[in-house]
Each structure stands twice: as structure tokens, then as C-alpha cells.
Image (cartoon, rainbow over all chains, first blue to last red):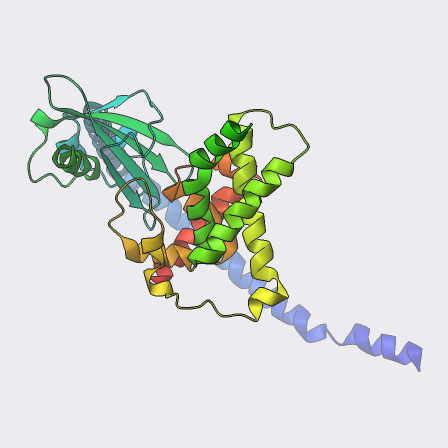
Length: 170
Length: 157
């Protein structure tokens, strides 16, 4: 009884072999055709590819130059704060973190749903400058000094807007 | 000695009350928890190393007292008298102006494992390292709770 069962099982997959063989033939034919097509296309596309690679390289160089110029990588890396780099570079300057407390600050913004807090204090001196400290959900703390003379009244930049509010509060 | 205790109470009372209130959500229970924390500090026999240790000890103890009260069978069978949770945020007198009471109330409604890290990080301005020490958790755990708590808060608002 047991021997019969084993024998039956060994005979069962005969139809599968046929199927596999058929698939292999089809694959071989398709593969050969692809090889042929690739050789033909290779010669035709060489000139086009070279041109495309050059164009991409030119674009990347241009973008990198622009990023270096405006310092977007440094300021725009903060989560929750979207930076319009072209507008923001001039008035903002990264400075050393002082670890200012809420009590010492002139103005506080707690943005729990965006994952950051901002503390602002108007600097002493003749120039209108605001010190802004940003703390992010991942633990990073960054500090900026904002030159208010260079901030546009209708700025959309979060830190510049906050600096304007701090000036009003102070 | 008396001066030391009065200094201690003056220094930490307001902050501990806010933390206790964020857990208890009613004034009387929050005050009881803070009082109990000070009493335990006075009876503490292990030496407190420095000011930071002292602060962390008091916060941790206050949170534990709150959680113990909330878990107690007696508390679960009682209903706070004449307290409205809708105005809970108005009982937390922060040393700065918070314009968004709605978010603060939503934070107070979060489950305890999200509420305490978020409250300490955003409203009391503690660092992730300090919160990890206070709550006796790993820094990675605190970061995860901050992120997940914020996501839950966004869904609730």
C-alpha cells in the first residue's frame, strides 16, 4: 500500500515537465531576439545617450552651484520648517546655541504637531537683531541670528516670521 | 533646615504642579501629588548628588505618585467634583504665553506613555537625554514616543 502511494506520487508530475520544457524554449527564443535587438539599438543610441548624460551632468552642476550659493542644505535640513532658500539666506546666520530657557525668551512658539519649538530674544545693541533657537523632535538644537533690517515684511520663512513676532513681543 | 525646604518648595512647586496636573487633570489631586513628592524627598535616605539629580528625582517621583493614584482602586471608583476637563489647560500656568490651548488639551488627553515625554519636551523644554533620565527609559524610546505621540496628536486634532 505504502509502496504504491510513493510510486503514484513519482509519476504525477509528468505534465509539469512538458510545461517547463515549453517555457524554456520560449525563453530561449525571446532571449536570442533580445540580444539581436540590443546590438542594433546599441549602435543607434550611442550618440543620443552621450548627449543625455551630458545634459544631466550640466543640470546637476547648476543646481549644486545654486545650493552652495544660498546655503539651502544647512538651513533647509530642519524637519517641519520649509525654507524658501532664495529668500532666506541673507537675513539668517547660523550661530552658536546658548540653550536659552523659556523664561529668558521674549517669545515662544510650541509647534507640537510639526515637531519643533522656537524661542526668540531680541538682541541688545543698536542693530535690530533677533536670536532664535530651534529645537527639533529628533533632539537637534539649532540657533540663528536674524538681521531684521534684511527681513522682508511679507516673508514666508518660518524663522523670519517668528523673528518678526519676537520684535513685536519684546 | 527649614530654609532649605522652603527654597526647595519655591524652586520646584510650580513646575511639579504643572507635571502633576498634566497627569491628574484636576487641581486637588495634582496638589496632593506634589505635596507627597516633597514629603518623600524629605524622607529620602539616599544622597542626592546635585541640582540636576534633585530636579530629575522630584519629577520622576511626582509622575510615579500620579500614576499610582490613577491606578488605585479607590481613585477609579471616584469622580472628580466640579472639575471640567475642557478648561484643563487653563490650570497649567506656564511661564510663557501659550496661544494654542486646544493643542495643550489634546496633549493632556494622550495616553500616559506619550503624554509625559511630549509634555516634558515641548512645554517644560527638557532635552531627550534629560527626559530619558527622568522617565528611566532609553533615549531611542523617548524619540519614538515623541514621534508616535505627535502622529496621534495630529490624528486627534
